[in-house]
Image (cartoon, rainbow, N blue to C red):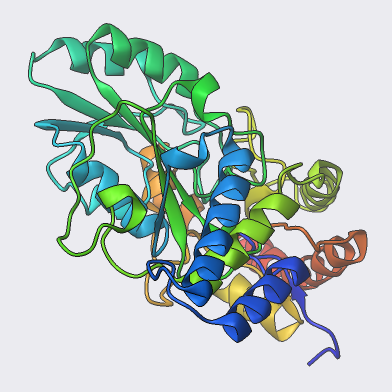
Length: 373
């Protein structure tokens, strides 16, 4: 095992930023309940208020529009249930936390790059008069493909529909402007941008109606009952402030893809013809199952993943690639490489070398044998 380990799975969870760690430690030492009126409570309240401003600034929201949750999954569930929409229309490439929150959702197809079919959405919106909520993610967690949220909002508004956007993967990596996009609800997660796991937020546009999913105290503007996770929120705020300028890793991602494609021309970058996050690459290794790649690269000291990281540690067939029309045999050879705030050129070189060694040792020889047969 190499002495150092290269972590390139930031879309699963990004390592805690130093500023977030420091903010959490300071908050844990201080203690206090933000609903209390004494000195400790007021101090805790000021910490939550500061973090609310920091998270709001990350996405161009008003602080009062930010509702803290336990993470992106809860934020998605809160929006999908709280909007009280009779119909939900969601893209075919949404995260499971959206699809499973509303299993009755109608599905918007996507093209070969994973971009929503706007014409199909327009037809679906026109097909029934029932109030609808359209849920389309900002950026895909597996391919990094960006969705045309502005056009989605335009079509939805024309049909009197609300719009929810899961921006868990986009915030802190690409510019996200809630009011510029015009969405009603937008979901965030701290640990995707260098904050702690277990905290997220739902931004609710001023004037949008949201019915709480639980009874309790009046926390979070009566929208999410329960004592706030003050230390986690403080870490979220600090990470959001540190991530406000996004990621400047596009050159590293492009170097990675150019190098791997030059070495293995049969490889494919999925979603390459669409606008993508600068940190994400979903790339195949011909003839080598994704599970083999993930395990072999891990042994070589490089951490990547196969698809989403929310399947109890199992490597499963990608529903995203299937929705894009990718054949199962090809999709099963795809891994996801995702860079983050502490990724370096040396990290990419380590991955390129390990990937090349594996391809020569396993994939290339298997392909040659198949061709000879």
